[in-house]
Image (cartoon, rainbow, N blue to C red):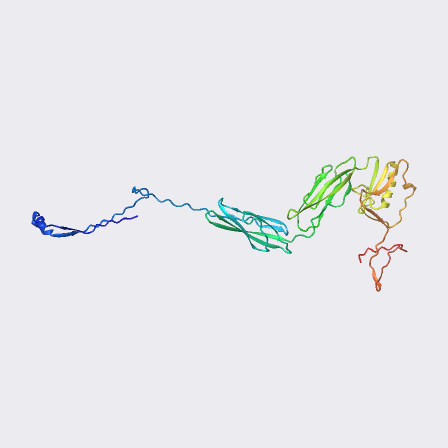
Length: 371
């Protein structure tokens, strides 16, 4: 604060007697005069009792800007609970407010808190909902941020998992498990073993997995679980049982037959024979060993083009059995049917076909068409 002190003009007068006491030359020059004195005094008073000292002014601190984060964008299915959670840079928040700015209207629970929730609406196509979080601090500063929620149509059918059909297999053989589901939005698969001698999976996180069956001395059941998970936390499971059987004993000759085999093969499981007739001929070479003989037919269709005769020389004895059977639970089909192709129109809806050479008469006609 500045104070100005001004002295008004002062006039000095000398009386005649006073004049007589001064030398003439002085009196001559001072008959009468006016002295004007102006003094400007600037006083800077400190705020501390007027001591006269000056305090240096300190700069005000720069406030930290208020920031807000409404959370990460999400993708959810219709008719599911969605949680929104916001965060802020300040610990001095006086209010929160969640509002919806776009999309089908929903009802927010606890919209005046940092965390709110709602049930996603039913939709027929993907729809984006946008929500804004506004915060106000104790100094009345505000900040806003938005988050997007993509809602996908919910599948009508409940999620299902199918681990496949139970199997019976031999020890030390490769087993394949293939699972299926009714969902097109599957996010993950998982195979786990819940019972039996432990095995090692190949590709346990895919719909199809495989393993090598363990060595066993008697039948053992292994149980496996197939789990399917969708984009959300929707989970479905199913189980499958695999019965492992021990290999034939050493006092038994075993032959294997498969549609993809050859009759000049050894007849092992890795190198099977091809036909029933080929197996019969192989058995005849082993009868003299006086060991039991078992012929296993692997899954598939076996075509009989000619009549196969089993005579006395193909029979077993009191000390030797000869058996023909399907392998484990695999389905082997024996047929002499001949497939007729190249049908042509005869008249109206009547069709005709030429019979292959060698067929002179028929007893049964089977229509495999779907119409």
